[in-house]
Image (spheres, rainbow, N blue to C red):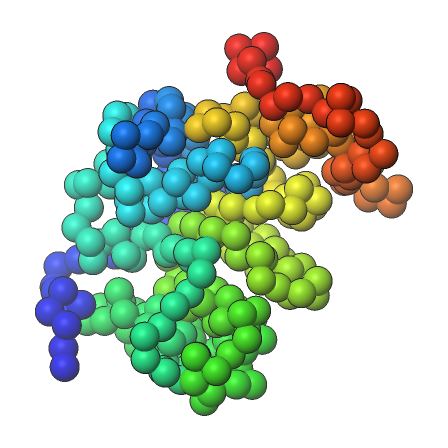
Length: 292
């Protein structure tokens, strides 16, 4: 069966973005979910050749911001631009050539083999000259995520971590210049957490813009060029992790006293909870954004 929108002609094939150029932007972005304001006045840019980590406590708005950047959630106010145009001006097939999205969890209703799941990432290119690269793109994505060894296994028979890597392989096979990854390391062991973040760095080095939601602040410090710290729907700080990961700010945002120490060999910030702190020493979480 041919899906009509995949065979649509005349699509605009994206050019590779210039290094450092703004490929995705949120300007004055406000998002509501029902009656609740989840994001309030977000200004954020994802640049080609850069890994941008979105960090912050549960409920801060990280996944909502990622979904808004993907055009999966509408803005109540403000706008989101991808590749220089507001997202609502892109047709869905054109947008699929420009951004790929990894959700927090991957679910499949049918027991598709792993190889077929990864090949789904190539669907946006059907009917374009770049469809000839499907086999090569799929093989490269499966090798990078170390899932080629179980290509024939049903997706439903995989462990949670294996599913997460297959879902990432699908995103990588899509070869869009903007990667939006929501907690890609959450289900992974130590080795594969490092593997995924190295892939993010490689994609940025190849010229992609990478936005990744992370809970592990040490991973964010080690692999991200920039980190945006979200707190109660706003950006409390945005910049290189070495500059924005201050103990006072993080303690207040997370309502947990932390120390920030330089790694003894690399100097990369290490964020460590203060586990012997008395409850009265833990900040109450209120943050005056005007003073940061």
